[in-house]
Length: 509
RNA sequence: GCGGCCGUAGUCUAGCCUGGACAGGAUGCCGGCCCUCCAAGCCGGAGACCCGGGUUCAAAUCCCGGCGGCCGCACCA
Image (cartoon, rainbow, N blue to C red; front, side):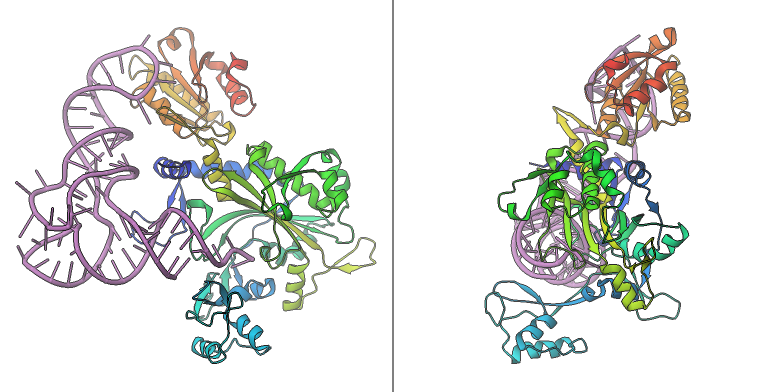
């Protein structure tokens, strides 16, 4: 019995939303790289433009674009390099894994730099000293395994050693360019950068289609603010939403899975959400996913990360997660309070003063960073998962209408009597009106409806013999399969109301 | 990366154990006939043995390696 996940992946590949890269031509192409087909790309672009419309523009975000390749120094400063060549060793008994250098340091209480030692030397130290597994006490170890989790690059024609890497997050670009952006835009704190970008992680085992890839896309917001005055501007911004209920899985509710609904006011009063700025962004993103992207509230939650789960840079950290029956809770947005971890790292490694001056000139300080980071591919994938419907033999995607990659299809009822000509004329009209319109005359009318259902097309327009007599066409609703007749000249406005205005077919008759 | 299961057209699948004929079928796709609204019917067409090596007169089938997929563990900065 196939689950929704399998059906969605199969549908997506078959109908051109996405598919694994290069497989058809080169067997054995590495996993974790996906092609967006025409339909998937359109949907992705729609999600990005909704994000710009609802988040970037209204919040005064300065969107920038920084390179995918950055010098290794950047990742030394960001702390990513530390995890760069992990040498791991595994206990044969309980299968716990440890970084071999840390294991030796802790077991022998030494502070020496073990970096220069070969695998054989490290292994000998472990065996000769009879180092035990901290978990189960066993002395049986597997060999050392290396994990290279960033893609490194040798930039320059004569370089043979890696001197740069593909970025594992867009954040470092924003942090490194913060000062320049701040100055060129005559910034005041809080100062917000945003990036749409590709990032690269050499995952050990990419899995589950778009859920874990080696190259993927993020929509990131980087809010730089004065740590002594985090509520500036946000006190007023949060005001209208003080009673908005944010859904949390708190650390103490891990076992039960109980979700705590906490108003923004309660979050502030209890100190749970730290300050007005962070609280506001938590509200904003829950609203965006619920109201704009159409994820039901009961399927959303902010999961509070605990020590050990949190990234090395984070002081507070919530994952916005979505629930599906097939995949369980999956992280869509990483919301991290990174403090001045990144800026101070770059200041230390580069020696460049990255501080800003307070408006009254009394203080020089490093801004703090709060970062909500959307995993775009996962969002798109979950849109498909949650939209998937089956009823008897009919399969359709109940996507939010405005997210559909094809918005309206135009069919002649039959391939004769001048119906195709009329239908093509309407198709041209709707295309020039800006609709993502699609024309099809192949196969029976029922088959064409089903094909459109399958890719989530919300509206189908059919030209029949009556069209030639009175200038009306039928307009069919994907979800109910009901039809109304509308005049051709009313079609653009009614379609706009239907697709973008939230009107139902009954409102348009 | 480890362990288990698995890999035949876009999808589902027959054949594999027991090596031998143009690799069969369904669905989908393309074209045509018919047709006045929800995958009807008929005719025609394109389309596959994951990759590499080995055994053999002969490999989809047996053996080895690789790659990939699913599940679990680990990883997820």
